[in-house]
Image 1 (cartoon, rainbow, N blue to C red):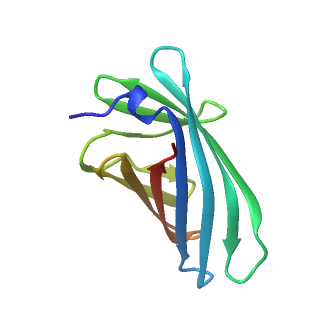
Image 2: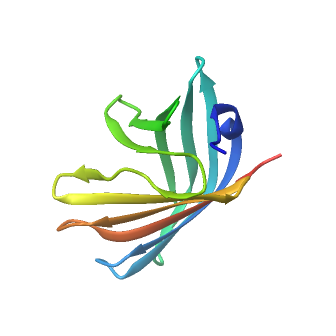
Length: 140
């Protein structure tokens, strides 16, 4: 069964691990993602948290996206409206790839343990080489 907008709306605990193969460092982010309804078919996605790279000091990290739900899946755009990727919110499934210059972003979502879910990004190219694993669990 495909999950819908109302399934994702709300607050999520977010834990992310980043394995940066170029720098040989590990990063960790701990925070929250808030998905707020916009109109009948969209969610504003905002995440904020503390990011620590290697042994460095914690930094404030913020990301914003817009998720638009349609009959065949979710279209994700950056907060400035540029398209990012698409995914189908069910099972364990790959989203569409996102080229960024010479680097390529690939994502795989896992909704098989709903309401806990994860997104795994693998990014490769001349400027980037890392894997980012984000775990989401409902708050409240």
